[in-house]
Length: 174
Image 1 (cartoon, rainbow, N blue to C red):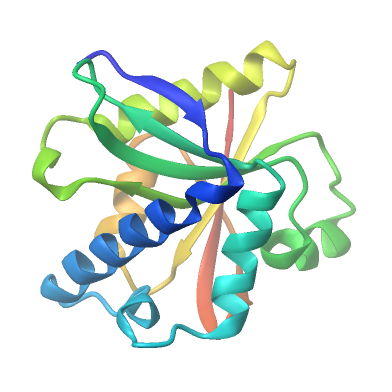
Image 2: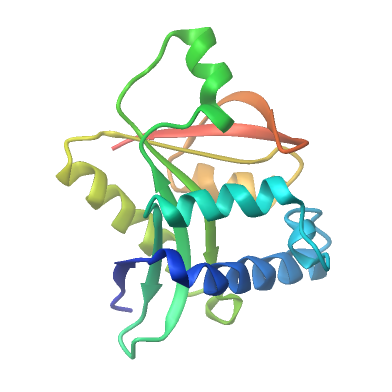
C-alpha cells in the first residue's frame, strides 16, 4: 500500500478528534481502557488543549492511501516534557529524538501492516533530519499494544505517568 503524509492544518483539528474518537470506540470494543475520554460528551479540557496545541504547532500529520483516503494520523514532536520529562531529568538524556503521540489508523485496515508502514515513514522523516532516536509511550496495561511496538524494535525504558495514565516509555535507535 502506497501511503503519503501531509501536515495537518490547525483548522483540521475536527478531523483529528474524529480519528481519536474512532480509535477510542474500537479500543473500548476490544475491552481496552484507553482514550475512552474521547467518547465523553465533553472530553477533559487538558486532553483537548493538548491536541489543540499540537495542531496549532503543526505537529500533526495525516496519512493517506493511494486513493487519497485518510487512513491514519500521528503527532510528531522533537521535545517532550509532558511524557518524557521525568526520564530525561532522571537520566540526563536530552538526545535529539522524535516523539510519537496520538498514533491512530483506521481499523478497517487492520492486518495490512499500515501501522508499521507509518512508523517506517516517521523513521525516514527523522533520518532525513539526522535524528536517530524514536520514542513513544503506551499504557502499561495493554500487553498487545506493548508487544506490537516491541515487535517493531522498540525497547522498553521506564514507567511514567501522564494524564492520569500509567505508561511504558519506549525508544528505538534508527
